[in-house]
Figure 1 (tube, rainbow, N blue to C red):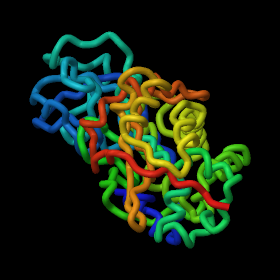
Figure 2 (cartoon, helix red, strand yellow):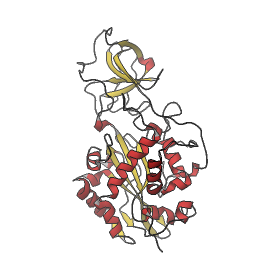
Figure 3 (tube, rainbow, N blue to C red):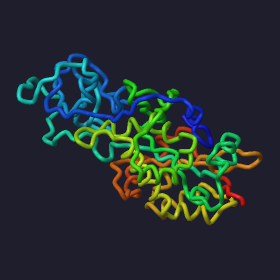
Figure 4 (cartoon, rainbow, N blue to C red):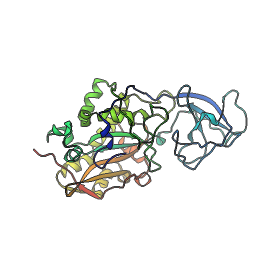
Length: 354
């Protein structure tokens, strides 16, 4: 999904697509009477912790559907691993409103209202870039944001926003992506970016500082590929997000990272080498013991030296403003469960020269 220094997705930034999507979901109160042994998945079209399937003839509590008229029901399967809230295709059975539902239940029914994913079931990856390294690369050096980079600019001494990616951190495939174009697609696919994104002036101004790639259209790509899936698995009034909410909450977690000992470690070692152990120790200091185990360090070879390009940080839970980044990191599984490309052992922190 990404190249070592900056996302391969940037190759698509010149393309355009009309439309602006906000994920919408509908609360339901009733039961699904299963007719077939469909897979009950954590995401709409894949990922099935425990390999759970419906039992034909059983009824399952329904807490919502993905949209109107909808393609999937959100059901509760008590006692299954990772999350009891699962998605099944609407063709897997017949829906019965709560007052008329009948038949044997899959297990004891829960009295809790269906409110979508529990906080620790919402999983994300924050991709925080060290922009000077990207701008030193062949892929970045001719981009407008890199030609204009100076030692005084924000991203010379702070982490920049690459993206905030909805992801199931219980496996090694980033999913879902492109949720406004029918069923969610594989993140390995390449789709054109939205031509326009509606952002408030306040969010746009903050984003222009923290995401210098806006000058090349990175924000349009990130919204199309990842933002359209943000909070897509939630049910109720908080389901889904528009671009303003998506980027505001992305900025909230990035700002917490930049206010931490992790950013200070990088600034204190500009032009010098940092090891994985040093970076993980800074995460533990800033966000609690074990936080460093939930981070992937991304590096690339530029010329004959190895440089640190990005940090991929696992998160789980709802993001508030300001963000409790420590709680979000601690709730995520260790990186060994979602290690897509491997963590490098360390590299140089690129300094922006005069």
